[in-house]
Length: 452
Image (cartoon, helix red, strand yellow):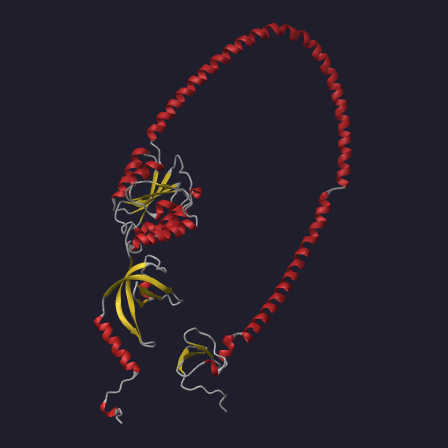
């Protein structure tokens, strides 16, 4: 009978073999580009993303660690077709090979465009782009705020148009970087600060044209929310007419170019002065016509007045007589009214509400004090009740059981709790959960009766 003699062979542990396989795979497959469909996607509290990359015939486990996941501009979702770059490695505790992903791009659409569509859909569901919340621009603003870069052509175009159309308008500029790292936060901060200035009545936010990546700061959520929360109407003037950003949807008015934004916020002063001159001329002509008509009516009234003057004189004497009688009657009536008023005045003083109010006000502090005492007693009672419930919950908590030295035995996989030794078989892998950490165990023997 032939047997194996360990002295003539190199003995390796499972960990040694797994480590050798890992080193070999990582050396041979250090930089791979793979395409496939995302399935079994999950992202625990650690922030790492675990998923399976599959095609029609095969599948491969993959992991995107938190540091790389934070750099994704779009949201990875179940069923998404992607192109992933990474390296093959081995997860030693399970002896499984997996793809450690360094970068992901959506297949068939750019990451920026996908991020644009995903964020647009989410903010639209919140109502940030609703037309009902957008405000009209003021017709004659005295101060215009501008949030843009001082080095681009956009600021020059805006100032030139504003000065040409309305030289008397005041201009406040908040210079910010319009692209690059941190540009979005700087733009949002400037919008908020400009909105807080009481003299600003309308605001222009924008920059010149560029690629989608150059304009991306105006697609950031922080900029969109700053525009929505602005106290004054905001005009978006980002890029050229064909460029579309999320700031355009959030703004109260979207201008195709920075120059068009300046034209939208201020009127042409010369045209206003010309219309005022025409209006003044029409007003003068209207007044002159009205004066002539009133003069004609006055002349006719004077003629009628002369005819009636004599009748008035004849009635004047009669009026004097009637007046003397009326004065006497009025004096007598006033005297009667005065006596009645004095009687009612004394009656009201006897039933004055001021005295009743003063009496009632004395009770208010007493009632307030009683209310405070009752509130304090009720608060203490409820606090004691909550503390009692919390103590009961702590006693019943599974965590307190684990703290006393017990553990929970579960199946792997599945996580079902094992209550009897007969629920497992030799060779099964089980896990023991403690207060801190877990143990993966291999069943070597099943003892049906407790060990004495």
